[in-house]
Length: 151
Image (cartoon, rainbow, N blue to C red; front, side):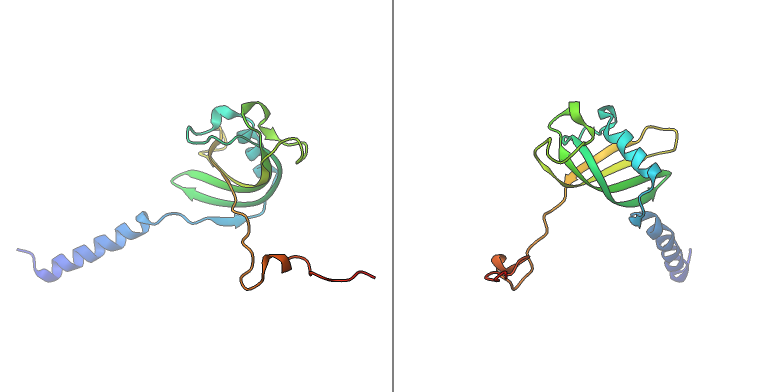
């Protein structure tokens, strides 16, 4: 019969092996390259690549930021963009301006790509939260100074 010490050592070793596999991969900030932008526009412009859970169809005006994550051979791209809710499948892709559609603002678009040869897939489109007012100042004082006289 194995000793209590041997059993405890085995359980500890098993725990050490299991923990790294259970951790989710972290997102890494990066610079947006032309290749990254092309991947985004390709995915956003082809509604057949949208996950069934995605119901917001965007046109993208500008790519603002990028975070990437590698998980089991798949690269996930989280693009921070300025764009507009196109209201349907017909006008997805690139926006010519920010006046053509209502619902313009900042969005996060997650695109998943398994390899350079497979089609990228849009897995999430979410509107970014509006910045909250700074604590301690009344809303009227933020951004501009009230009562200032211009000479």
